[in-house]
Length: 218
Image (tube, rainbow, N blue to C red; front, side, top):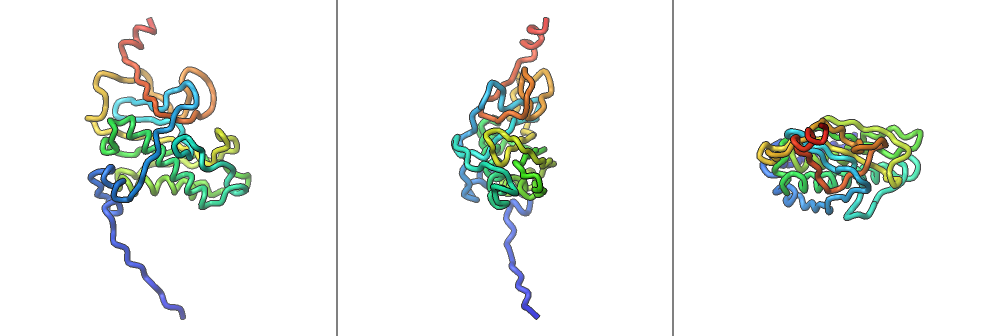
């Protein structure tokens, strides 16, 4: 009979769900964020409605360079898919930070993640791929990083990226602009003013004043 070896791990603040400062947690983990991704088209990369921040899709890029391409199950190994999802998470964090007053401490809760995985026909481990992103958010935010999630297969992603992802984030009240608001609830991942598929997120934040929208409608 073999010997059972148990590994004792000391819980970190994230595992205990007590992360007082996600920015400090990033430094503790030695995590560096890329530059916020730039838009690939004429659409807003972030919408803020009330205290909710919606992103459009980000790709596994590092400072504008696409690092992971190809389909899981035929061209890309599962471990690389997990790494691609984690890199998407880093881009989401960079985008959220840039859009939330310059600090991840202004995030109250990660509400939802939607991930699309470039998949070969027989590949059915999209959830395992997206765990790379979900685990990153829990590492950084603790319990505030727990979120609902959808992981879907796709065969025709932008730039043949292996993974793309969107996020819905709840901000702390002090980070929400008081004088600006959206006139309609945006759907994360849909372009503005035109039909089409899921766009790729960038860094610009678009907010419309209610008064201006009403004036334009008259």
